[in-house]
Length: 305
Image (cartoon, rainbow, N blue to C red; front, top):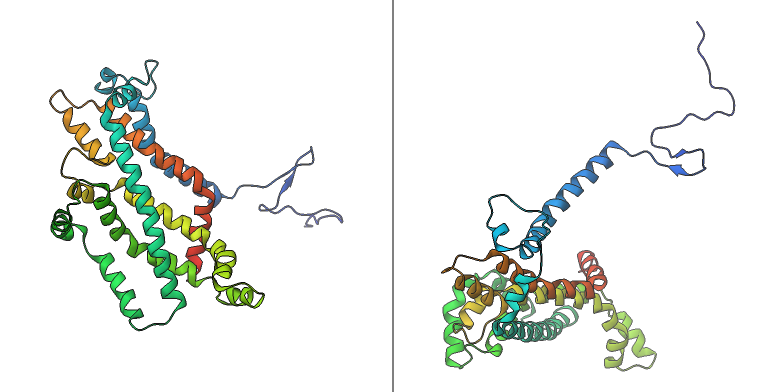
């Protein structure tokens, strides 16, 4: 019995090699593992996006459809009436102003203090350096609830209750320890020899730092700023302690009060979802602005330090 042998000039096609179509374009066969991973990623994306979609969808529905037992995924009666009802009151604008002032002040102070501390830890050898690093870890492990009484009494004695300054001080103290550790890796990843070489070329120490080192640390500062922004913008418990009066509220506190004010008439979930969407909009805008720098900063911080 004879077996057929491939003739000269023919090439056996392997399953993982690209296939050439009649039009000359190459098409690579999809492996089963790749297809499974793609399907799993799509399912995870749908699960992650669905709550956001449901929040936005509910904010556009009339109250009768929101309270219906049959869920409404798409409605021809959708509109912006819930957003109009939320924006009609002055409390939203005052809470938005308060949150912006507190959040931006916190981000600025956190970046300044954490950056200087990270420089000191990474570039200088001084007595008590290890104790300072251990203290940062210890402070980060303290539960926030255990500090509420001390924080309230401190702000009350300094007459800083119900003020943006008092909330900013507490937010800064809560965010700085982790931000120092984050920036420490970025600073340690930039060789000090770069500054020394620039100083040999005639730059001062300050000029070498600002023109050589600081631009290389920009992605790390952006990543730390994003972390501080999210912590300050979404924080609720510390604000509840520092702002006991209704005269000054951040957006999370305003949302809680907005929810409680609707209890007597039944919770209007359309307006609650509209308010939640409005709170999320500044975060989305901030992410769109710093997305490129933030991605570079997170990846760089993962491999340096």
